[in-house]
Length: 281
Image (cartoon, rainbow, N blue to C red; front, side, top):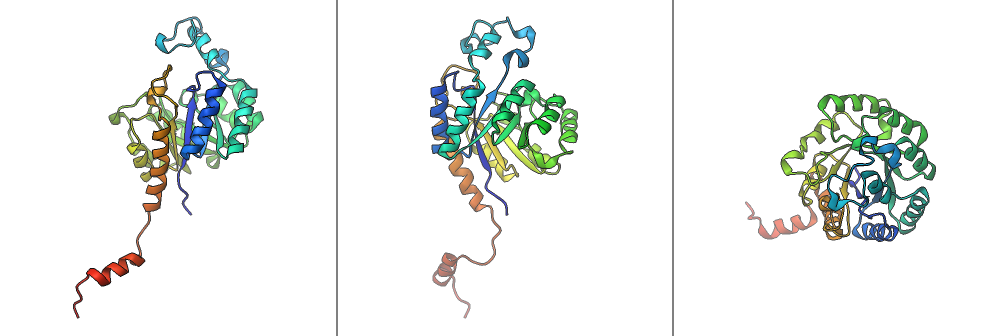
């Protein structure tokens, strides 16, 4: 039986390094109807290239430190905070996922056993981490295909096809926000022919495209989530606020109900036919 697509509220760094904001976002995502809240885990000294450590953030108005490394450190939750947020999520009835950006973060997050881990686009060519994830973490692995050529995508899918049941493969374009002409939704159909399950990670405006992704076969819909799209940070403007997330969850569920093949008339149609159809007899 085909299930309704799962909705992932990607909190990314929209908590702005504050645990109280992350708590509020978790409660809000649940209230909106999302199935999962997802955060990110980095060890900045492992995941940030050294050439960037002492350089300023490329967009200083969004920086949380004097250097890019300081910026990343300021936005990072430690493993005890992730444990707390996972417990909170499960206590209120929403799933918990984490994107991992380096091997140390993979090991730390695997220890707390989230509902799934995500290999983000920036890590999708690090086959060592993907293979380590298969060994270190026993659950479901989600993987985004952003920032790749066709050849790169073929190489990634060749690797994941060795354990197809472990992976959810997401189509995405890594632009924030992404213009409609760069969304390339037909890639979902291409992936459906090659993967067990396909997701869509959207950085688009509005929610219409997410519904289209669902009708093309995406069984997971991930959208960046924030409490305030005008807040300081690079991801807020490409994120949904609570009202938008609530509408997305509502529309996905309603459209899913409509995607059925019709057999006989409905009961109401039978009543209408007796009232409106002109009999030939």
